[in-house]
Amino acid sequence: MKIHFHGAAGMVTGSCYRVEVGKTQFLVDCGMFQGNKTLKELNYGEFAFDPAAIDFVLVTHAHIDHTGLLPKLVKKGFRGKIYATPPTADLMGFMLPDSARIQESEVELKNKRNERKGRDPLEPIYTIEDAEATLPLIEGVGERLLLSDHVEVHFRNAGHVLGSSFLEVILRENGTSKKVVFSGDLGAKDRPIVEDPELVSETDYLLVESTYGNRLRTDEKKEDRLKQLGQIVSQALHRGGNLIIPAFAVERTQDLMHDLSILMDRGSIPRTEVVVDSPLAINAAKVFAKYPELYDDDATALMKKQGSIFEHPSIRYTVSAQDSMALNGKKGLIIMSASGMCDAGRIKHHLKHNLWRRDSTVLFVGYQAEGTLGRLLLDGTKTVRIHGEEVRVEAAIEELSGYSGHADQRGLLEWLDAIETVRGTVFVVHGEEEARTELARLIRERKGFQTVIPALGETFDLQANVAQAPTVPTPTVTPARDSFNLYAELTIRLAEFMRREKDEANRRQILEALLQKI
Ligand SMILES: [Zn+2]
Ligand SMILES: [Zn+2]
Image 1 (cartoon, rainbow, N blue to C red):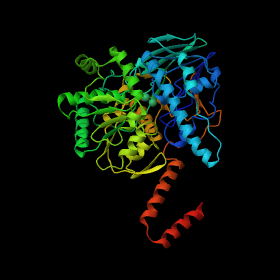
Image 2 (tube, helix red, strand yellow):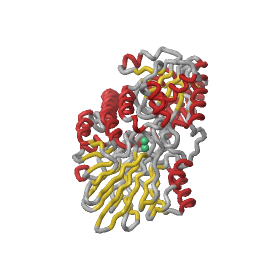
Image 3 (cartoon, rainbow, N blue to C red):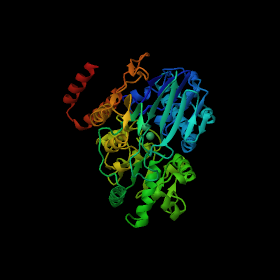
């Protein structure tokens, strides 16, 4: 009985745990690494295990950092079933092909550049065909599932996104059984649309996420959240330009549509054109509309009033690239677009067209991983590079933490407080280094549970309750700013320096010194 940590160990993204029990071998999640270039590199190359030897995959929720490498798994030989809740299965149905489209178009763009540079072409991590081949393997299942003599799983509501779950897994081997809880991503209480997370009372082992393990947020309650959103929207409209909201297409966009509808109907903000510029969000809204029984009381009330929570006279969707580009010269709009961390998709175009304008506002509503464009903007960077072009940041940058899909430190501790017994170990995963160290310390102090902070590639023997070092060499990753981030900053600073420094002798002296170093 072993568990191997293949992702979300030392970073937030790339969730993937492999469990061996008896003759069965399965994965919990198979997510994509996101963030800086060194992290993204981990998506290429071979898996640290044989995909053909995996019997099945259990998926906690539809986010790409938990599902995004499933098509690669299939490409490399996996033929088993992929089990998830019905909403998660529906969401994956369009998110995986979309992810493949992004991989293909990014590689196409890079290959054009590589060709000009005389370099060999790259291959996408996977193609639309691989994603299409993955879809028939996905099965939406009920709450409880008996998978083999060795494995039984219970999907329970994690309150993170529609259909999200944490898993209670029973492993049986040689007459003994162990319970392992995989927290997946845990939602905060009182979030829009979805119900609060369920609780666990006891377990042998627990893998707990720690995205906000070292952070407390203030605006958690619904009315505080609405008030703050209302203020930011009013200020942005007053400034005269557009309000750009980078948002995950699934859940975050629907949450904001839900809250903006409420604010407009109450008269707290003027009726303004809200454009959801994301084909993915339209598909997501359809899935949300299919499962009204999963809504909380507020969303149910809004649905009864409007007929649907996603149809409001002020909200419109753009599907085609032309419609999206037509937004470029406009003013006074609220534009929501993905990706949420600004590292891909249409949002990059909107940022390119709005960041340099003094009257624009950019509002961040979700977690921004280290090294992403979103994090650079939040950190106050004054010039950024988008599609190889330098863009000066003049727009107002705002942040609202009340829309985070993740419980903050207090929320995580409240969820953990409900657990009376952990007979074995708590593995603190899915967090950057400081976040998980801090959460692990708090768990030991408050609960007295044994904690382990697993490294990427590490294995843990559940029966012996001991860790084993990685058997395959694992790459060193820097979830924080990597050399590529520094390179981007250096090129921007150099260009600024050339504009600012008028003295030719000074310029030469500094540039020559730099050239000697490299
Ligand atoms: Zn998630
Ligand atoms: Zn996650």
